[in-house]
Image 1 (cartoon, helix red, strand yellow):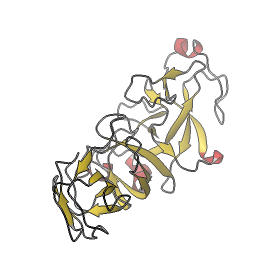
Image 2 (cartoon, rainbow, N blue to C red; image 1 turned 180 degrees about the vertical axis):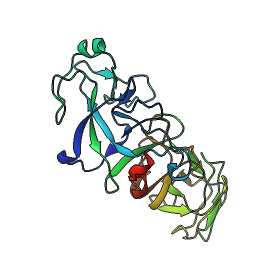
Image 3 (cartoon, rainbow, N blue to C red; image 1 turned 60 degrees about the vertical axis):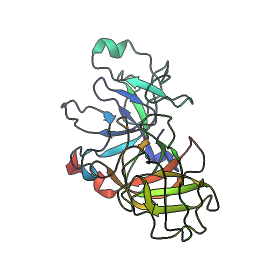
Length: 275
């Protein structure tokens, strides 16, 4: 699930849900006029379309923390199923469905008697870090662990079976899980799914049987692609045509199934003329 790092209370607000959309906690949402012309609240940013999302033109608004349904709906069995109490809420657009709701808690400009569906949102701008889980094509599926099938005495390259995505030179990171370089990270310049080369050598020789995890993000300026619900970074997606731009400040690839990365959306994504 996506989450904001270092949340400050003054950067949290309540927002209505757009149309009859289903909004889950830990999704990244936008708030504006959506493509269907029913932009009355927040809705999912979806996966990026085009380089720097220049086709999709989403303007990230925030990460959903929760909602104001009195009886919470868990995401069990859905595309976002964290196993840790992630919930969802559905927008309501008639008087009958509004007055039939049981709700609580919304703050700010919205009166407590307002029957709209509301979510609490941690606001985003170009200075706010989002912690994204890294999954391989589906919620909860860890990146593949790759095994070196060749040796390297200069630390500048080795071969594995095909990795989870087609690389873009200098936009992927390798992490050594086992072997002499265990715990080390390197950015790869390769565009091959099997033959991997590096400008900065691994500190120690690479041996046959050493294991690695590789993901299509890098420290510093990076490209990244989310799933369709904007709840995780999809490591099966190649960041060549469709991707968001961002700045990666930290990643942890050390724990199987718990890999994550901290990324700030690039400032260009917050240009209001995109909406």
